Length: 289
Image (tube, rainbow, N blue to C red; front, side):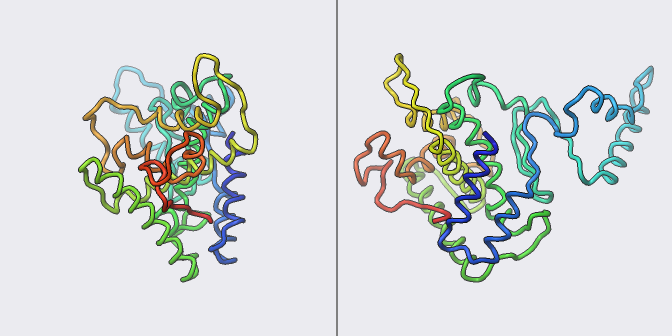
């Protein structure tokens, strides 16, 4: 799945009609050079590797504070010495992109329902986990990620022309969110741009990857086809108790579902949304094209 998502992103970059040659080369390099951890750290996949990793830490006996301080010190020494490998907590259900090192992480605790179903239909899994993968990968091109190169170094790798196009694409998506938000009398500001971009670009990449190998399975108990299941699955993970707290860098859950969908012709076609309806506006946002 991850390889198909990456191939989709690379294809989008190559077909871009506004990226100049130099920034296109950097964009391609950024995706290809990105370190991708799915489930567990790639260098800790065997029992021997895990045991070797923990050998540096002291045994905890009668005292707690002393061994804990030693463990912190040894962990910091390892982080300073080893720039190649990366470790992360496995328990939280989370995924993230480390902007300063061009690393994306999908924790093992995310790879379960309602995001992923083992041996489940690809339509559901690409809409769920595939979207998450695309989201994290596309953070490399959000408002902050676009200012760093393939190594995570702060670099202006854009031409003035391509940068202007990028900013216009960002503004289009912001306006799309503002239009949807007005219907809910909520607020929106530019601090949300990066997450909103990752939501939209990640879904577009997952959709393109899914469409390359369409899952034409039917679901006798459901009145939906595979494409509709893909879009429904993309929103299942945003289900929340009404009034639940949303972190300040994210748009409201309903907008994280609706705004990417309302900018995709494939969604409007799949659900036959009337032209100029809220979920099929005449003016839609795009990114690479």
